[in-house]
Length: 263
Image: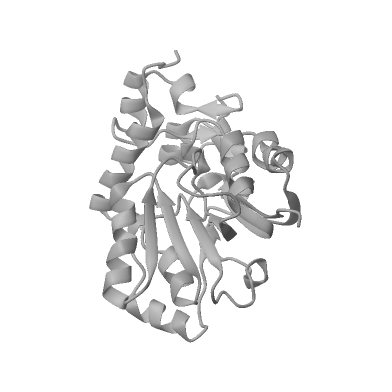
């Protein structure tokens, strides 16, 4: 059933460009008021779910810190961190997502750089270029994670931190239609999961829509073990529910890790 002809980077780039046009939740830029509050020290950003990330996970003072918002376009986290004093680079696979960040930067007078690319290849940046990598839930759109973690480790300075949010792979166990349409938890998939290997192109189009992003349900070995294998030391962990999903009563949908590159 595997569709070997699909290019996940090109497919997901087009899918997220369309999401921006449709006003997807994660493509709606922050308000000018939120940016102004961030300039005064009153700010928050989301790493998983809808809960603000623990401020202790980030430097107490972001002034002058080099922050990479990885696969984090949409005009949300990047502009807030820039307004809080960080030197921000937003890296994303979608030109339109990056356009949202540039729009906020122009509107509110922020210094912010945007770079287009695949999260598995950060060759645009030199070694030890950043103090923080902020990587909200997005690696579900990458077929493999080892290069993501290796690149994060490479571009961080010694003592730098990686904040990563990702999906609990167990959410991919269930039949999509039964869950969304009837709230039934019917286990049909093995893990790890992939839209590409579990469904044909025709089945994907019927179930999700032909233009929907391709998703990959990575194991915790790839998520957490992959960070450890890349050289990181994990120092923080949290989880969060998905408020609108029937499975939320039984399991957390999101995990988040704080990892440090040893100094």
